[in-house]
Image 1: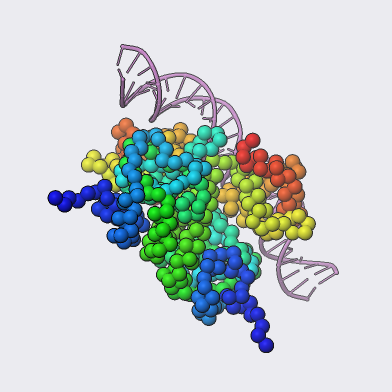
Image 2: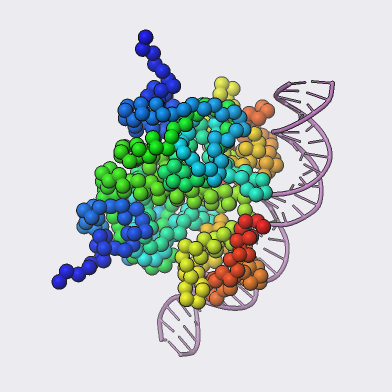
Length: 233
Length: 233
DNA sequence: CGCTCAATTGAGCAACTTCAAAATTAGTGG
DNA sequence: CCACTAATTTTGAAGTTGCTCAATTGAGCG
């Protein structure tokens, strides 16, 4: 019987979220044949800053943070990657060691695709290259905006913005809670502040009834108020 | 007589600094035929945030800042572009309105290349696309690092880092001063702080004899000390 | 010489950080 | 399922850093 094998890239639904969707059937087969699956446990690293990457990681499930640790122990999260995101692409393309570390925030299943598979397709499939280009252009815009926010907005505004970002990107579960569970410290590391400041801000939002919490879980109950805060109104 | 006409892209030395160097002779001719030259006076905008761009700008001379203005009047500089840099590329590729504003910091001479010239080459010349990709990958790395620095480093460290960045990228003139003259406010806007904080920090550096100033001009006299400060030693 | 704009300095204030301790929650093995 | 331990969250309070506003000085320019 001819069954649909979703461990094959050709049939992997995850693909639709990233630039791999620009690949031809043949390329997908080639990639699928050389890829390997990996299970990463919460807290483990997919790769670390300074490491030479010989391939990219495509996230099938779970969440990873891309961050950089400073000497004084502060870990700044630059990006949160979920299902469909490809990690390590930038380093492979620029032929540089990893600039950020990727650490699993919960158990993950990822596919590891050797570097040559990516570079081959870049060199031969303009559609694919263009797709990566557009994708990277968006990452760049996003990064530029984070820079501007860091410089112009207060911690309160950035916390509100981070909550809205998480809500928008991860949606909410049946009870209305944001469908990603992060520690307060992780949230603080996205905002770029100390965890205490983050906690106090969340407490404040809760008092205003802008958010509801239940353990680590957060639900946005007054998005308009949060929006107004972010915009400085 | 057959003279070298440097107003032609084929002969423009500026090209060697950017991804246009990956173009073929034919493409360069095509682009050169459709490009227009523009002179931009200090303070004038090449384009503004939210504007739809129908082409890119290639800087022949002068310096431009890429920045974003907040409602409260704070202007955050994300990037400084000089000779050889192509501006507006990101917006054209992502087919989006400009995310940042580009304003001339001194008199500039730029070439305006219509959008279709760029997209045509992207669609037909993999070398070119790849070159842009690598370039954008570097911009992204740089942006990520700025985010991390904003979150982890003090104003003093970031001022020092900005000075070293300017020194490295623009070199120094005969008297040892950094070969780009920015107002204190511009420097503060790169650092992402208020101009007073920036000025006070520079005064401090001067007292320690880490820098020398003469009007707006700055010379780094003790790069090692600045480096140690940046690294937090 | 007078005008305008940029740079500098002062002082008070608000935001954020840090360290420490208490309270809560999550995780683990029996 | 419970008890115990470890980890995380929360709160308190003091200490810094950086921001803002206002006033002064200085530089460039017509």
